[in-house]
Amino acid sequence: MRTAIFGGTFDPIHTAHLVVAREAAETFSLDRVLFIPAANPPLKDAGASYEDRYNMVELACAGEPRFVPSRLEDGHGSGNAKSYSIHTIERVKAANGEVFFIIGADAFAEIQSWYRWQDVLNAVDFIVVARPGHVYTCPPGARVHRLETVALPVSSSEIRQALARGEMPHELPIAVGDYIRDHRLYASA
Image 1 (cartoon, rainbow, N blue to C red):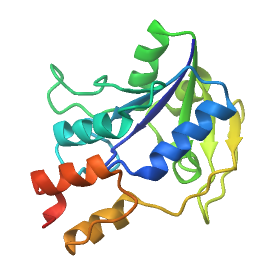
Image 2 (image 1 turned 90 degrees about the horizontal axis):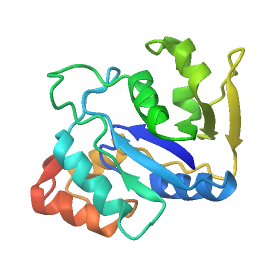
Image 3 (image 1 turned 90 degrees about the vertical axis):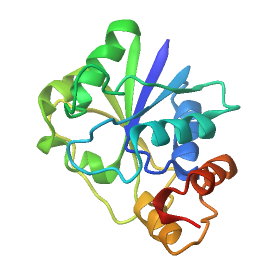
């Protein structure tokens, strides 16, 4: 089974995440894409709780058979331990065949700053998604597949800013927008 890890804060998940996952699944014949919200991301703070972010991922993935929301990083039993990609990769590889890692060009450009980055490079094939204005170089030994067909200028931080202004961005799946409104996340009206 060809499985891709698509991790992130998903704060909130938006349509560009879904388009990227769909395009990666089609282009690289993936059987499934695991959407794994980070419980305690090491490089950024999440605005919404892990539970809210997971619930939004679940809503966004509904109706897409290849998209699987995963609680792999829910943090239960580990206190406030940071969510490091290598730990997630090791857990997914233990139960799956071929494993890919979907990552934006902006994040891949910083890969050498990650915890155990060389182990990460050795463990997976990367599907690097083009991001407007971001370039990267491949570290030696990295197995990289470029996904150039999708370059969507959408960011979760811009969506959060719009929500804080009381706007409902069109880049949110309808069910996710409803969830944000109903749970009053991101200071939305």
